Image (cartoon, rainbow over all chains, first blue to last red; front, side):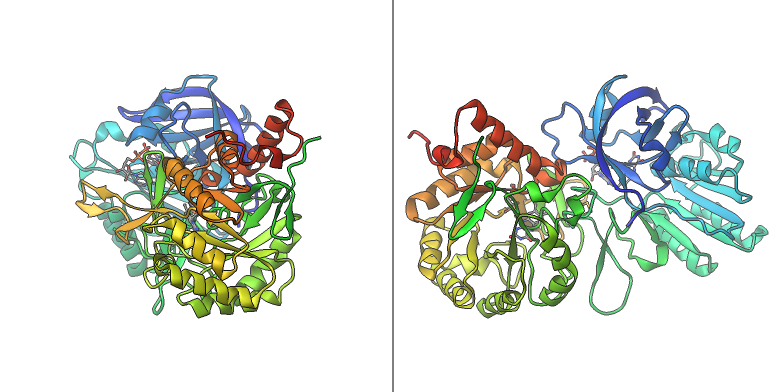
Amino acid sequence: MNQNSKKMFVAPLYSKQKVTKSVYRLDFYEPDLTPLFRAGQFVNVSIPRCKEIVWRRPFSIHRVNSDKGCFSVLFDIVGRGTLALKNIQKGDKVNMLGPLGNSFECPDDTEQVILIAGGLGIAPFYLFLQQLEHRDIKKTIFYGAASAERFCCLNEFEQLDATLYLTTDDGSEGESGLITEPLWRYLETAELKRKTVLYTCGPTLMLKEVQKISKQFKLPAFVSVENVMACGFGACMGCAVPLDQPGEKRYLLACTDGPVFPINEIVIDG
Amino acid sequence: MVDLNIKIGTIEFKNPVMVASGTFGYASEFCDFFDPSVLGAVITKTVTEDFRPGNPPSRIVETTGGMLNSIGLPNSGVEPFIREKMPFLRKIKTRLIVNIAGKTGDEFARVVEKLEAVDGIDGYELNYSCPNVKEGGLSFSADAAVAEKVTANARKKTRRLLITKLTPNVTSIGDVGKAVENGGADAISAINTVVGMAIDLRKKKPRLSTITGGLSGAAIKPIAMAKVYELLKRTTLPLIAIGGITDTTDALEFLLLGACAVQIGTQNFVNPAIGRDVVEGIADYCRENHIHHISDFTGSLVI
Ligand SMILES: Cc1cc2nc3c(=O)[nH]c(=O)nc-3n(C[C@H](O)[C@H](O)[C@H](O)COP(=O)(O)OP(=O)(O)OC[C@H]3O[C@@H](n4cnc5c(N)ncnc54)[C@H](O)[C@@H]3O)c2cc1C
Ligand SMILES: Cc1cc2nc3c(=O)[nH]c(=O)nc-3n(C[C@H](O)[C@H](O)[C@H](O)COP(=O)(O)O)c2cc1C
Ligand code: FES
């Protein structure tokens, strides 16, 4: 269980930004909860004015600005819910549950973090880097996207002192191909700090590769999963994540046991 | 003052609003949102004799106005339930109904027997209906004679309130209702989910790992209403209406039809405080319409 208790709250939209062709950033004003949000946690958002949509939609907390009392979500338009969310206007009040789920933990003796993101899997890593800003840790990001114009927040990651490695599916920026390719090479050749931890979020194929890499290089790794969710707070048991263990099948819940798991403890499906 | 008290069998409930099995966890999941003590009753997730892991993913699909599930009754088994869940459940200041399922009629009776020794439980709801469980569930309702026998067996084990929860996925829910009345049930709750299916065109695959699952939510309200209506005609037992209740109006409609109480299911996922909202909504409605006691309203439908 996470340390903060969850709430149902209504937050006004403070600002909306188009980040790429189909990705939007929404900043919500919620001064009470914003300082409590931890990287990896999410909010479950009720889509306004959309009667035909039944469930809320979960989004990672992307960044916080405690001075302004705002937090942000970053999302891609993939269906009806996200399409409707894009149309909300400044001042619109949005009902949410949060903070939900556990968070990325970075042990005190960590010397280097490597963040591996595909597409919108990048969303929670901005807040993670914000939280690591004043710690003496080497930060490296491996970030893959479909094409050059789909990357989000590249400059800002550099401002947070992170070294970026990029790939695109079509070769329009960085190497073409899977982001795990340069990661394999990096781990084989670079001088790693002694206490290095991997964190990953994104498409299943990539997560499976990171699972292999973590085993191969014996590096601890954490994954943030994005299961479909009906409730987001442990009531429906719909978001089952299979534990990787011999014998009878056992499941954890993505929304309350996760969304962050040690990558070698679970089965990554798909 | 509006009096929302109701009585089912010999048990009094502070109001007719309950939360449906499998949609309210073991209540602790909701305590950050509201105090479940305001509800008429809490009904637990189904408890079985032994541990069940539940079905493999994917277990849930959103559909138009509802959802499909094939959760598969995951639970820790009755002994761990008593050890781990009862201490918290007992503290909630309202009625507690434990929902039970079994692979065989004997398992139902054995689970009841084990729970009889535990204090803080006001009654049982026998889940005859979950369409997800391959080895059981469906069959208890499919045959009225079996439904009667299983109820009678459980009845022998307990004097606590005994509710039988029926599935709509049968030829005649009225026949099954009549049978469980003969078997000695104190009340009937209906309906459980409606069998349904969804397909992913892009992957050319069923969306649920179990291929078919149970439909719930607003989409099934008209079905639930017709089934409750049929049961009201066929049995004299108190009826607890379930199916597609998303707000106060939905709940009032079922009471108007003649249900003595309602259970809210899927909407708990969407608005975790819906139980509290409906309790308050019903009280407001009664106040505005000068209804002093909810029983003056129940069953006042004009046909
Ligand atoms: C903990 C968590 C954090 C998330 N964080 C973010 C985030 O920060 N930014 C972001 O853009 N998205 C995030 N997602 C995914 C996001 O919730 C889905 O994209 C969104 O629910 C889709 O809603 P929709 O109505 O637009 O799509 P729908 O109409 O529901 O679906 C459109 C398509 O997307 C697929 N889809 C739907 N939900 C998911 C899902 N959860 N995972 C994978 N595919 C899905 C469907 O199968 C379908 O093919 C997160 C999910 C979880 C569980
Ligand atoms: C995710 C989910 C899990 C459920 N689990 C159970 C269960 O364990 N036992 C049971 O008797 N009914 C279970 N049900 C059925 C509900 O209790 C209820 O009968 C049904 O969902 C119809 O009500 P609704 O339309 O308000 O959801 C479940 C329903 C859902 C959606
Ligand atoms: S989404 Fe309901 S239990 Fe996880």
